[in-house]
Length: 356
Image (cartoon, rainbow, N blue to C red; front, side):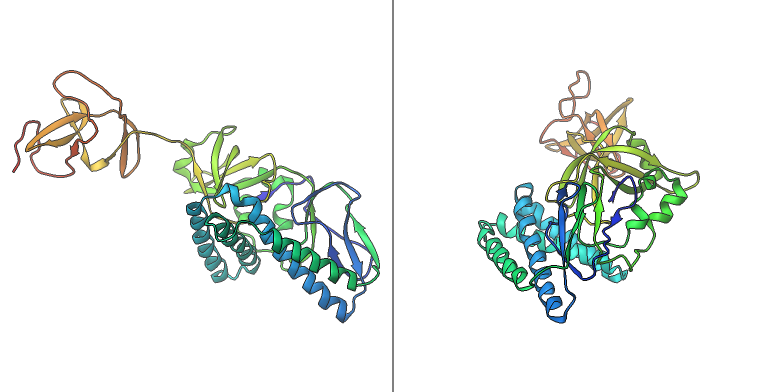
């Protein structure tokens, strides 16, 4: 996913010398002028304490995110997301994408805790969160006086760590690029010099670019809403535009969403599922479909007699056809009904044939 801002996703810079301890949670929306970090003297001991604070912040983020996400998952859907994340981490590690692997590992830890809440192993994490906050405050007190504080120069969302893609996707114009430029951006490597720095995202709207086979573009229309599953949660996203090029086997869908999902942990790159249409009815194998006397249908076995049963096809793919379960006809051939035993294969089939 690419978050849109009016400018680049802005790095948080300051003339105050020292190291920062952030007082605002990642993804938290803040107003201009809000104090977001304290700067402390850069000593060996303070660095050690700061590392302990950063570790507590990571643990707090995981536990608090799990509690926020619990209601959005079932045991089954959380397990499915965990398996997907394990696969994505393996792929990111194999590709040498350290930033992506790290972000995915954090999300995996969140989902493991979501699963603990859903399966009843934990009722909540209130005790653990309170303990961590108390421990953090003691560590903050031990740092002594600050060298100064950093305040937000604009309203927006704070992220205490960059992933290296800020100069690729941070500009609003990326969503309006042509096919070649967009492909180049989506295949760009992260800028390692940015990893670990903090940033402000100044726009609440974000975008998602999804590659699809060009021949599937016919199922999508700009301006329509589609159910897009991101991280195991379904979002009602608007298709902003499609991007294609003559002679290319793939194309891109650019979806938009008008708010940053509360509590959701989103990687810059992740697997998604898009539902562009749903059909309800009998699922009939394509190889079972026949035409008799100009009618579409299937052969069904009634006792030892083959009968031709008419169907009305609602949707079709390379494997199955979805047929109207309420389709009713009169005449020589009846329509397909529940409990009809469809004949998948056979030679010299015809209505009325008796089989052993």
